Amino acid sequence: MLKTETIQDIIVVRFENVNRFNALIADSVKEQLKQFYEQPHTKLILNLEDIDFIDSTGFGVFLSIMKTANNSYGFFKLCNIHPDVMELFKLLKLHNVFEIYNTLDDCVSSF
Image 1 (tube, rainbow, N blue to C red):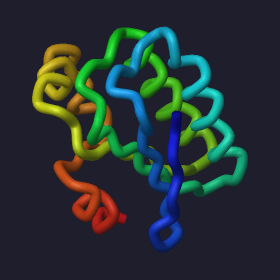
Image 2: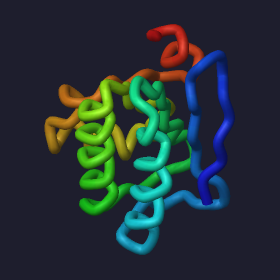
Image 3: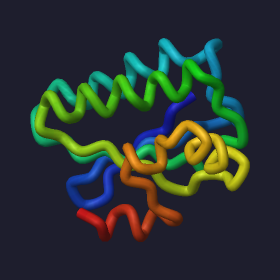
Image 4: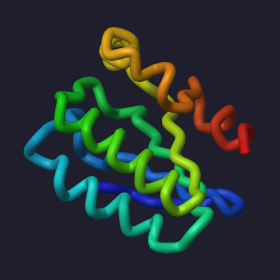
């Protein structure tokens, strides 16, 4: 469900064969992402390029991972957000909470 690659010292995670981030997969995704922060100072990008729907549990996972990252002095950034999903980020005022970039390259360069 999640595919991981490393660019420089940055972990880039994206969804594979999934286009909806909802309650059915939220717990599994949260546990997988939290494992990366067992090492302090982790830099992680979640690439949402194939996701065209996120429900409230998905947004809850983002907030939980942000807290985990902050507690381990790490970074959690998002990129490639579908326009419909970005509207939800804005509606929930979460576009001001997360570092969001249009492209993976821009996100990697932000480090």
